[in-house]
Length: 178
Image (cartoon, rainbow, N blue to C red):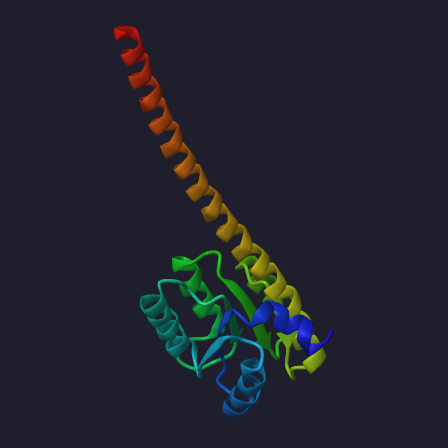
C-alpha cells in the first residue's frame, strides 16, 4: 500500500482523532494531516464529543471518521463511542488501544466500530486500515450522492410528465371544440 493509494480515498474526508497521550496525539495527528482534508484532535472523550457536536453545528454533517483511544480520563473511548452512536449510529470509528484482550475487542466490535489498531501504532497497519476504511466511506458517500442526483432527476421527470399531461389535456379540449 502506498501513500497515493490511501490519499485517493482520504483526501476529501474529515477526521476527529481522540487520544490522551499528548506525544502520540501530536505525532499521529501530524501523519494524519497529510492524508485528510480536515483533522481535529481532542485529548479525552468529553472534549472529543464536544468537538463532534460542534463540527456538526458548523458543517451540517458529522466527521467522516473517528479514531479514538479507549483508556482516557474524564470520558473513555467506550463512553465516547456510546454517545456518538446515540446521535449517529452509522459513524465510522477506528479504535486505537494497548488492550489486546479479546473480551474488550468483542465488546467494541459489538458497539459497531469499524476497525481496531493496537498500540504501539505500526505505520503499515495504520495505512492499511485507513485505506480499507476510507475506501468504504467513499463508496458510501458516492452512493448517497448518486442517490440524491437520481432523486432530483426523477423529480424533474415527474414535473415534465405533469406539464406534458396538462398540455395534452388542453390540446384534447381544444381539439374537441374545433
